[in-house]
Image (cartoon, rainbow, N blue to C red):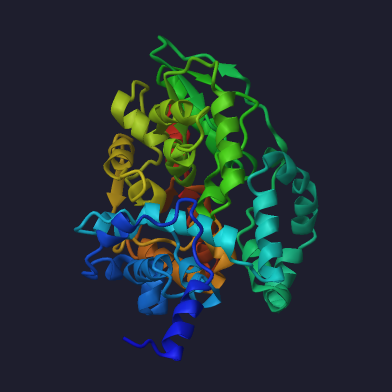
Length: 451
């Protein structure tokens, strides 16, 4: 049989295509488990906004398979579809075949960062994000300049003129979710060990987070007070750093591994029963340490043991039970809507527990929004890297929350809180967004909310 010259050239061309390397590419067995039924399409936020097959989980799995087989390249045309994924994992919850899309997209993102040369502007923005946000000590240095920036009224100027958006939509997106900097942002006054109130039931470690400890320090303080009020001795190692969520979700392999090792070491000699986290995205990554460090012979077993101790604060309290007395937050029934963070709902399968805990507060009436499982568009740093898609999702989420008629919104993830607060302000709505731990803390201390 004669082989044509074109056929030979095509075969050689396919062999020369830039694709995945041999270091943990998307697993063909996991790829083959997808039967392409399309159940994921209706729950995929990027597909809803963009409407393209390749911007759906099913479409991306097609691309992963084709790159694995050497049929197409890992290039700008394919990477844009991987980048459009929020990593919200709604498809994992929806899939009737149990496709582990979370493992597939994670493997793909690490491949992209190793094997795809990004443009200089894209590289610079990503370098800024992954240098700044996973480093709370470095991030703290920017607090004073940001405080001055806000006090001088520059946010109103930039947002009114759209000047920053014209220069860089991504920097404008980053600036638009910047929370108010207060004196509390500069405080780092939680001691290493806080004694339990009354009889000690557990000894628990608390992870402070990066954005959480600087921009949402009242949430951490509230979490500690709630835990101690319910019989927990709290340990807060000062050596702890970033949980590795941001770099892990964006394929920064070595940075994620280094941060995971640091976190494990910081809790190594604390003798805690559980490790408590109050941020959904961080919690999901902490529970994945066994996977992140699976190839590390020194830390493999340590990572599994550490991950087994990790509990979301609401998950933990729902399991061990509240012992502190709870008081009403208002003098009338409080209509409250709980916003499901994706990495809590889809990543950790935690949905019932937060509602169980919140319903124990006297006078609370929970409202349920439509499309509760749809991502708000924050998704770690997605709203900074893909601002157009994030804008539409943020608008939809806030409208669905407002449609419940609730007096107050509660969210268990700092990224979600920033995104929702931004879109509430854009719609001129003066509704507060508080963490469930803050509500429990107020209830325990008898503090009344002004609604």
